[in-house]
Every structure is written in C-alpha cells, then in structure tokens.
Amino acid sequence: MSNQPTNLVTYHVDPDAKTVSRTQSGNTDTVADYDPTSGILELREEWRNYRTAIIKHLNDKGWTYTGLTSQKPKPGAPKRPRQNPRLGDKTPAYVQWLAEWHRDEFLQSFGVKELQVRTGWDEWVSRIRNDDGHWVEVPQKEPIYQAVDGLNYDVEKLLDGSQRLVAARQCAITHKTAKGHDDEIYDWDADATVDDRSDSNRRIRG
Image (cartoon, rainbow, N blue to C red; front, top):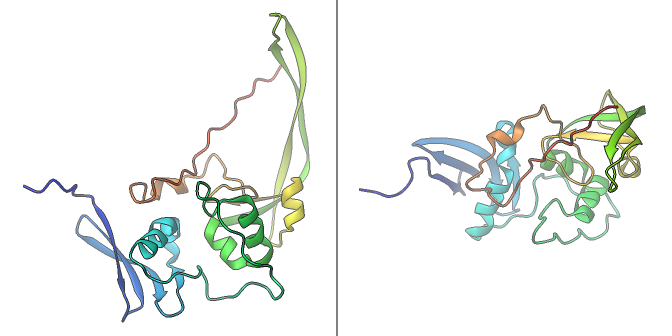
C-alpha cells in the first residue's frame, strides 16, 4: 500500500506546448505559459497565488527562469538587487527595485489590487496600565485611506505612507487587508517557506 498522500501536488513542464501544469488528486490544470528558451513565465490569472511553488519547481528541476513577464525593466534600470535567502522576493530593496523599475512584474508578483491615498488620521486616547500599575492615557492615531482609480503609485509616497497599495501579498510597500483571504488558496505544502499571514493589531478605545 502506498504511503504517498492522496493530495500530493506535482508540477510538470511541457517544453513543446510551452506550459507548466499542476496535478493534485488526479486533476491536472495548466497553471502557466513558459518559454524554456527565454525563461519567461506567464502565470494564468487564477493561479497567480501559486507563483512561488511554480518558480521553485523550475529552479529545482534546472529549468531556466528569468522573470514573470516578457516585458523588460524600464531603460536605465540599475542591476536587480539580490534577494535575502530568508525573505526571498519580499526583500525590501528588491521590492522597491521592482516597484520602481519593473512595474508589471511587481504588480503581478504581489497581486496588487488597489491604490489608496491617505486622507487624514483617526485619533483617539487609549488607557493603559504603566509599570507602576497606574492607569495613564496615551494618545494614538491611525491613518485613514481612501481608494482611488488606477494604480499610478509613487514609490516615495508608498514609503512615507501617504499612499498605500492593497495586495494579495504583504511586503515592505504593500498592505494586505484583514478581510482578504487570498492566502487560503496558496499551495501551502509546496510553499511552506512563504507566510503571507499576519496578526491584526488589537486596540482599545478609551
């Protein structure tokens, strides 16, 4: 009797059809278009959240991988920064380079959905107990954002917080809303080193 799990996920490259397929529980789906010669990977829309697992398969099997889109970085782009082994494509310098010089790959890699601008601040006072055991009032504030049409972002404004990008994946310059559940369709077994989930902060109004 086989000890392999019935939900084992496998990936396969068809160099003739120039596609990548994913098989689980006997079901096979085409998840990306892939050119072995150029190393360009074009993820199918409904499979974009499986990006890391697909790229990992290409790397593990020795297939050439050069990028997510066929479009090149903007002219004059500096050399692509190296990724931190632990952070991968979430390495801050790498993320900023993508956002500034390779917009299409950045938008696709992080599943950017919406641009928001800061319109003001929500201010309140919290009552907390200090080290002496006394209750004290501490002023707090939180930015208020409003969605705008298009994705005409400015990297400097993303960094200073006057703009915010809502995306499927959170990184140094994207924000993942608590009501989004895109990570639930991640290929977690194959993508175990990536964790896009974050705990929401609790606050008590005075």
